[in-house]
Length: 407
Image: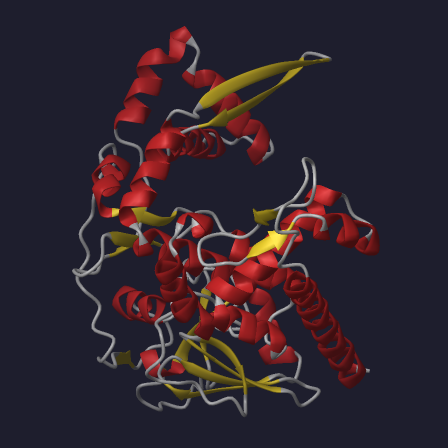
């Protein structure tokens, strides 16, 4: 049945690619209108973005009923398809080759800021994101894509951030039954600060013995920050909250990458992000080194090395960050005095479920080289996992390809 499932997935991708090709073909057939149109007659309109052809607008009316969608939805599909075809040719080729599904290709075209890029910048982003397609879990692809778009035009990214600053809000809706809903949009630096303060209250209550649900404690902590009697405590918490942000800097880029949920940040905004936090400087991790010890326990330094090398769980297509995960001995620990068993080249971050599959589920795991894991499932399917993502065993990773480790 597993082979049949793979066949169905392949068919779905093939059908999605065919659908995109047919839409593109209809665009080609609707690229002209009457030379002297009467008032209200069909016009050529800009459906896609820079570098895409004009489209005869009545195509949307033809397409919408075929697809069973509204005319605006048909227009949006045409826009995304021709953006893929003319501005993102590598992603388009990956779609046609079955490496991504149609909805994934459309999300690349729709990514925030992509439509603001000129054709050349969009092509650069396309070239750098293409090696991720079909190898990284989709959420990681979108994270990588967001950073590439920012790096492609930092001035436009800064302008978007400034516009977004004017879109901040806090809204309260009273729901009845003594409950209300609060929704807010804040600058990231302020959201991190607020979140750290609320988390500090949760830790304090848990340490004091509270068994309340974490979400309830977070809500109570937010109210406490607005309570006059707790103002001094709240101010103290807000001044210097505890937070950990691991930042990866590149001297030739205006964009920094942060581990966790923050995503790409312009260097110009980094000081604002960190201004309210205690900063701890850690030594640079040399990934060419191969530290090891003879004990079973993993020392802090080796753990930091492995997590810097493997920022995500080393299970096929995982999106879990490696911080907080177990560091598993790929070649199981033997209490026979063998030296150097706890070494970076024999450790990999795995969640408990993947760890259990390896230990109890007949999944085979071999670290063929530092940071390159070969998995064999119990049904015999083979996968390689490395910094560039997940590859079928026959798909040898390109060592010189784009670094997709924090995407």
